[in-house]
Amino acid sequence: MGSARFVALSLRLGLFQACLGALSVLTLGIFNRLLIDEFEVPAALTALALGSQQLVAFTRVWFGQRSDRCRWKGLRRTPFIIGGAAAFCTLTWVAGRTVLWIAEASQEGDSSSVFLRGVVLAVVFLFYGLAISASSTPFAALLVDVSTEKQRPALVSVVWSMLMVGIVAGAIVLSAFLGSSCASAGIEAVINGVDRLVSIAPWVIFALVLVSIAGVEPRVSTQLKSAGTAASTEQEISLSAAWQVLRSSPQVGYFFGVLSLFTFSLFLQEAVLEPYGGAVFGMDVCTTTRLNAIWGVGTLLGIASTGFLLTPRLGAQRTALAGGLSSACFVVLMVVAGSLGSESLFRAALFLFGAAAGISTNASLTLMLGLTSPLMAGTFIGVWGLAQAYARGLATISGGALLSGFGTLTGSQNSFAAYAGVFIIQAIGLLVAGVLLLRVDTKLFQRKVERALGSILASELD
Image 1: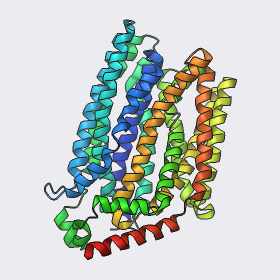
Image 2: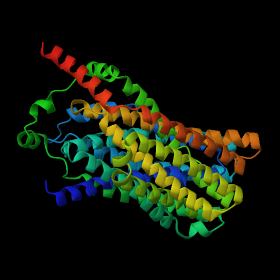
Image 3: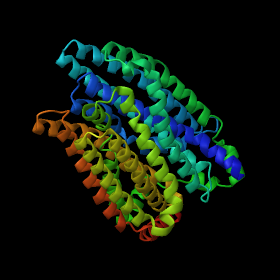
């Protein structure tokens, strides 16, 4: 494949991740801000409802295995990707209508109905999480299918960067969908803007997914003939044997734990960032939505530059430490900005935090690529994805819960001190994760895994 064609393919596949990034702005950005700040739903209930999508992340492994066995018209991944996308776009519309349903109860002052409808929203997001797992796991496997080992790091880097592009573009475009409702103090105008948003955005996103995926996957028969990989494609390591390999290296459990801590700390602010902008700086809905763009641009620049400027010189482990330390410092700076009431300092600190988070993310991604095996790439990707999914879900839930807890201590959920408490915990977690990543040893991991795989394959041949 020529370089120009490969770049075009990478950008096209990255469009799928960009769509997921835009959806995260809608669900964890706009819905989150409206429920907490505009509709006065308790932060803990809101975080539980929106974070419940990650509770079903264990199904990622199952969906990945099902896509391995699928042969629908010679395609393995595409049916799951498109089917899952159709489901999560439909459920986004259902979630939007449920948010408006909660708004009705909030306007009527019916707290019991608000709680019950919040539980319904949590159930909707459980199914939404299933749809995301059904689509995103086969998508990750597709990246392996359409690339060589040499091309794979570049492909993953482009696709990961496109996720940030989706967050930035989503923050800008989705706030434009809300239109004049952002500048209006009336709750009815806000509700009308959300109604317009959820009536259009999910279907536009699904159309973009179709553009990204349709026709990309080579059919199984063609792939086998051209690549000559029939044996490797048809022969699979059993689930029990895979678990033996996973348990063979202590680095698997160690990296799983550290990656979980890093992901948890990185996204702890996700549930409280926009409410922080509204409560402390008096920003309207559209302005707080655009905070995702500031953070996303910084993260994109961090991811794009680190692989060229820092990692080759420092190594992945020390780059991760540098990213963790700087991320913690800039989170603290966001707290300082709130104490001073300086919106410009807050925006600058948020941008710098995004850049530092991009450095850490790039280093962690490099370590993840080193902690895999060609024969079990899907299994290891699934394990690392599982760590990230549960850690991110726990971060979303914990962010709101911590905000409510600190709010109880300070006397108000929307007080500066309550938000500051959440950010300080986030800074500590980022610093600790950066230090712990220094001990990840990819060479030791490779030796242990190769030895375990050799033993298992030899026993299967016997």
